[in-house]
Length: 202
Image (cartoon, rainbow, N blue to C red):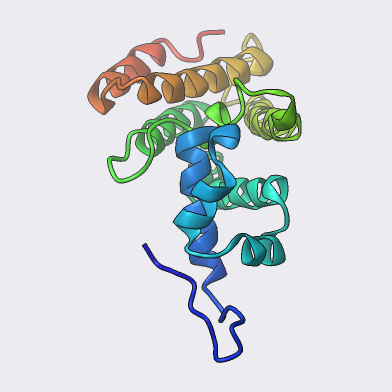
């Protein structure tokens, strides 16, 4: 574990904020908001509590920054998936990205945005609300992409982009829960393949 180095005056020297935030993200990802104690966070980040507050704010603010990093990093597959040429390709890429992200051996299993504060006390209410907004934003972006697919004729007029977006979102969230429970990548990939048979389903 890295320790925070001190200068001649006893004040902490500079540290790599990007690396520290990456480590905080992994702690939140693995342990959730409440499970990520201050001691666990600062130990993983290799800095003192004083330096953490100075650089990132309180725990809630650190969690927000960690979620942003997760969105731009491990969860960036959504941005890429929405650029796929057809609605079915979008759905397949989202499920593939969810499986890849939630089952990578070198990282915590599951999804930080799904499990981060699902079961937590009153003190975690801000984090829970933040994650609800995060999940809803993902759903709305998928819905808007499917609505565009209808406008472009990729989805028929009989399709329902609202239900399709909810279906794909729910499936991706379920993949995260299953991955956190130890279901292997091969099984999740087989399940996703079955789920997309007969697309667009609705």
